[in-house]
Length: 393
Image 1 (cartoon, rainbow, N blue to C red):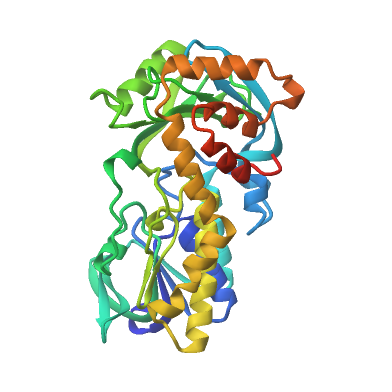
Image 2 (cartoon, rainbow, N blue to C red; image 1 turned 30 degrees about the vertical axis):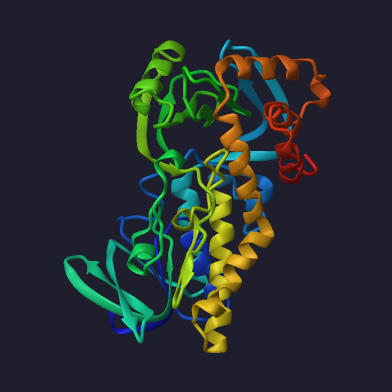
């Protein structure tokens, strides 16, 4: 039984970051235990469920069973309700996270990882000052399981990270209050993302419509407490739905915090690494975390293999993981953060002027990069960041 074993690696959290870490660690030949507090992998869904085809293919070939909509274009809606349509050079998807997350866990299990649900981790074990396992409760019984390394993939403001002495708290100005409802019985373009930018709709954030087929969509928004004038995210969303889709049926609802922050300055210590939301591996501009989380999970899993085989689980050795993260994309998160700070300060009048400027660009020549260059027109120093982020778009 898993409770009586010692593992090379224990992973706390069975989302995309945790399952990907488990899969790549198991591929590397080390013993892996993944513990998930909920009853099922993939439930409940706390996500807009959007991911790019290019990003997913780093790890897996997309399965048609996961895909609710294929996205080939996006629409930006200004405060005065002018629209800008842009064809995407890289297609994206709206996923069914229940199926997607379940399959990611199955891939890890197929490689030899042990997965246990309803396992609530409530503490860490330490040996000679290093993290050396976890404690918790499973089906009413206490457990202590030892390991050489622990990966925390347990979400925003990771408890695992805090127990190990890492600073995981998100500043209030960088924590978006988000709500999303899946609305059925409506008509949407199933191949298009819609983004509404306005302080009237989503101050300090944006409102999205992500289609799940032609007659349903994930509709949600994130707002910043700094700009929301003491109105809740739910009130903003309910007002929008009452105006735009008054006859739609709400078939699911989810709320939560989204860390629109830079990656943590420090997300490893002796015997422990953080991945995904736990390390704030979320795009600060969009709040998207599926592909960044899987990137972090893959790198953490591979680093765990290297550490176990080298017999060195020190912070110094594990620091090759954050170095790899920043090399493959983490630096762009810092650039996105700077761009976000500039854009979310814009007034509705300034947002309308940006849309007016983009409208003058031929539809065939419009791109996301050009929209962002217009959006940071008051901060020329950010144009370089925009070009580095969107190189090739």
